[in-house]
Length: 181
Image: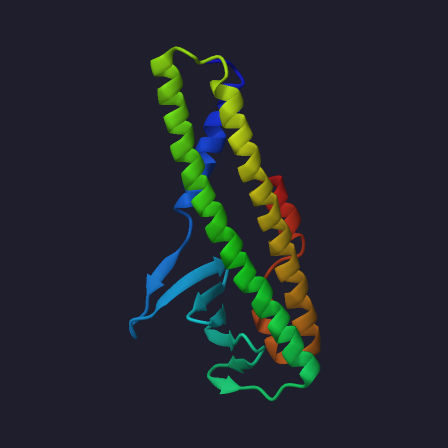
């Protein structure tokens, strides 16, 4: 093993972690809740947010309910609710795609290593794995950009709708923090 194989091992570990990172939980009503990021999850076609014992729901049309009560929204506020919804569902979709890609990459890497060891062709094994890892890294950067876009949508929505402020918990620089990892 060369010193360069350490990053490959780390990328393989990250790929496996991404594959199993999606958080799902069964609800008492039989539904499944899927975690998006931090305090945001999906339940069916609704984005759910939690903060200090309170909850908010945002539907695909941008309709918002807080603690079970629907809010009367202006068209501009509803458009911001729709934007937040789209970014949150995009985050879930991108995260699921990355998890699948991570699992596929891990399987491919293991197959590549086994095949190259069996055939005695280990000269290019690391390069093959690095090429696959670069694809996963590109997806991770896209996920970081999505996290920042979700935070930006959160800020616009909370500025236009003060009742949403308690649910605006994504910190400034969330995309930058993500890219540093």
